[in-house]
Length: 497
Image 1 (cartoon, rainbow, N blue to C red):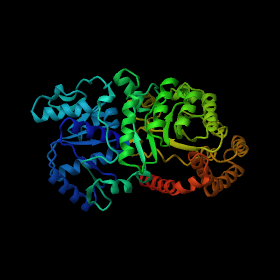
Image 2 (cartoon, rainbow, N blue to C red):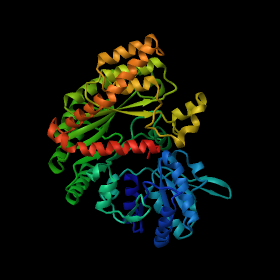
Image 3 (cartoon, rainbow, N blue to C red):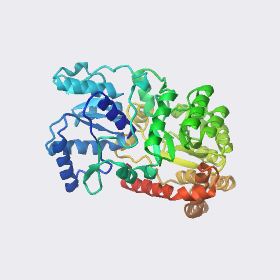
Image 4 (cartoon, rainbow, N blue to C red):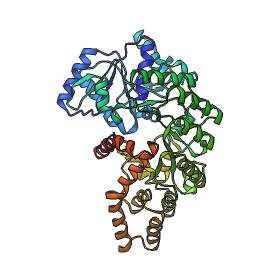
């Protein structure tokens, strides 16, 4: 909820009485939950309701908006977030207003114009309907001085949460520990906005076109470190810092070294970053490791250079990825690598190249498997609409963690834990006769051994690397990871959350 917390604290800094309500399990059919929500709305009497959503949350956002109106909430509703930014006009069927792009100025201006009954045409980034149809106001310039934005707190003030019982409670430390991943021991932070890359499947592809820039805007190191010091002072139980930036490493070696020196001295907690292979250097890895880097995430997406270049718009060859993966391994880091499955533009040979590339990565590591989703506004969505229209109806209901149960998808998963020799054997059997009984039996046997034995062993060894190779420490933190794994499995069964 980083984006929502940022907007919440921004409005409060401007003197707006903002209250944040978290609805992690909203169910419009739950009568008790509806009744509790109705009492909450009656008590707070909002003048404006904001709903933040991604594409997978669209149907729940629509159900929530309709429920609020059924409960007698007369306040106008504004939707924001990446999905309304990507596809604003359909959202106006339910929302009174839609915020396109950055939300700080839009929300503040909207509140001021509604309060003083001024025409809405001057509210930047706003889409709405009037007697002339859909109106889209001009975009305000991007906020370049990120240090001017207020920091938020680990447990935000003036916040409530709806429990599974339907009851709405104050969001305090106890509630935060119960609902947050890893019992609230990870501090999530964003130090940048923007992405220098233009991967055709990514929302940053659209945002770069929308704002006509791919510039990465940065908070100063002093601003970031001051926030982290406050968080650790208020919450000494924090064990990790999680940098959620798309492109935290897209800076010079020298700048990152200076940040890492300050982080090691003033924060000193293990941390997590995301990276693209082209932004990783030996100097950066050395500085990050010395500062306490424990986990690093990096995208492979496909082991086929053709797919990465021609379909995904990623210019980094797999040999560069493998070189960086070897460097990450040499630094003793816990790594997880992203792979995209269910790509209709791939051939079986492309998919086998992904399997073989994964088999070449030094063990152990995690693989995060995602089912390709075509988001509106992106280049790949436009291409898929022309060449694979049958995939266009899946967007709003798709759980991108649930990939198709095909033999090659299973083989991709197995490539994380089987030995390179075992993978080559299975690849050879598939190439010879993919539908043969021999291949199917070999794949089934490998799947059983992976689920029962190899995947748990791999998980433990990856966690041990995150603990500096200390097996005893890995065992102590293992329950947190098991709990989170169970949570993600349940979320996947529910359809994604």
